[in-house]
Image (cartoon, rainbow, N blue to C red; front, side, top):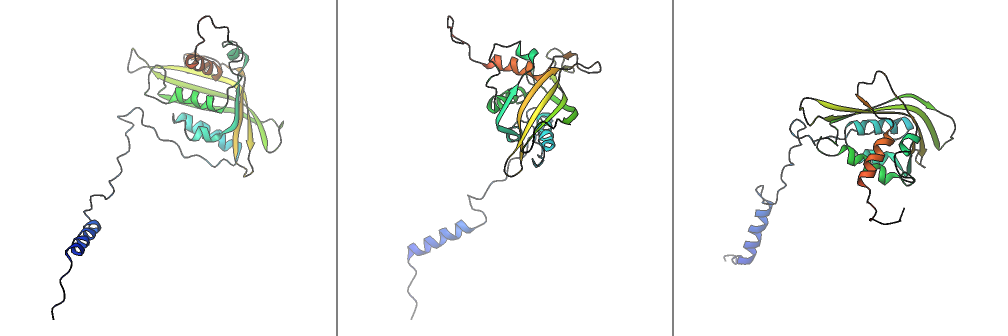
Length: 236
């Protein structure tokens, strides 16, 4: 006796299953797009590989590396404590309204660095940033889980010259500063406070403009993006 014929519906379902399992499936994953090319795309940047935050020096190195790469997040954000605050030197404070820096915390600091570094190089976004530290010293004032270091920093920003494509405009920011660090329960450190003490000048600085501490630039960028008071308003 001949076996009964297959039900047409079953045969169709089997064919569909075989089709889905075939290598030429329409839903097979597409290859990842090629990485951007920094030679043709000025905004193409790669974040450095961060060091484990097991010492204050590792945090310092992470901050230096990510700023020089012109990439703010996630490394800069990760290395700042949730309670981070910035304290300006007197020269920077004198150029802004009273109370301007009172609430300069982590969110405002990250926003400042993003507005400065992220974007196509032009008159307001540098094409290069160099950061160096010297006289790095543990003051011994704070005890675990906190540490305070005094040091000198030098930051150079190179902007493309809008009038001559082959030329650059260079600004430098130098200051004596204090950094406070704090460790969590896992002994992972973050930067808790950045305090600029006084600006420093250098006769060997290659930049034509020596502008003081980075508080000067924070004040300029923060003032430019701050909402303006309505005319006639008496609000502070």
